[in-house]
Image (cartoon, rainbow, N blue to C red):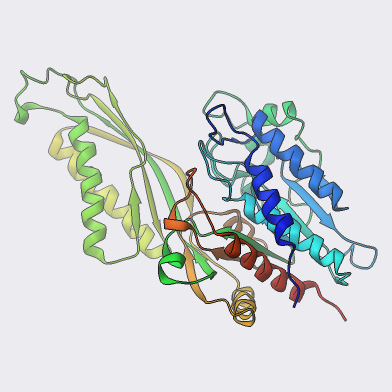
Length: 410
């Protein structure tokens, strides 16, 4: 049974994790930033040192391709994730999947495994969506869900334009996204949740991924004096916003469904301690692995907004920011993940991904699945993000098995 080079993988994770730290030690590599360029340069160095052909497409996605004259025309097995981060990030989210994919290719090359199809490691642009919206933008463009032109024209939170920034950092490629349709795609990732650790599992075979609905809600009332305006005479945008959050929490609790709802941002105007808010602007993140339940939750929220608008005498408008349907992954790949984990004596379970990943985009064009490894305390998007080295190595070895089964010949 093949095993990856654990020291090489873990060292690269640490080295990439050191790129993009500020004087206080906080790690931030936002898409198409100077720090992102430094991370990309490091990755390209490793890809080239491994003898891979490197391709950068027009949206900045990076691909390292292992192929030879015997398999060059076959559809490739694609592996990977992303290396951009959130603000003040951990070192594993996304990066682990890219570096483990590279490690799998290097292990197979060093063992002189004959492959009947190319293997590609992919690092997709702007998966996190912190600087540019939507998230998973690079993989969305790759599968044709958004035009290259529209994506390159995206204006970031800092007023920058994505296409201009990619050119500035030297990663505005000249190859059209989607230049190769994968035979299959497998993404290895930390769970970013508490299930595997709390239940004592080493490997998660991810069989589906939640649908995601993002909305920005604006509530308009009247600013007025906090002391002189009777409660019954107020058009309080802040109170109406608070009612939305409480309603979502109570509704989902009553439903006993796996739905989740989050108000992740909230801003009041004029934002003064002694003034009734005239405006509340906030975001709502709704998720559910079942499309019917997600649609029902969206409708329930819409009905409640109509009701609270009337009851609080405020005007409410809704802007849809993103909407992705739930994804069912390929059962054959999921079974291969289970088989590898069982053969290696790794306790495993099937599970749903609560977070969005590039895999949900690639699943539109190719059989896809994901492998999860435990996250300590379920923490992610945080410098305390941690996965034990043994779990990182175990996940990479499972990925190795799955890929070898897909590409092996004679």
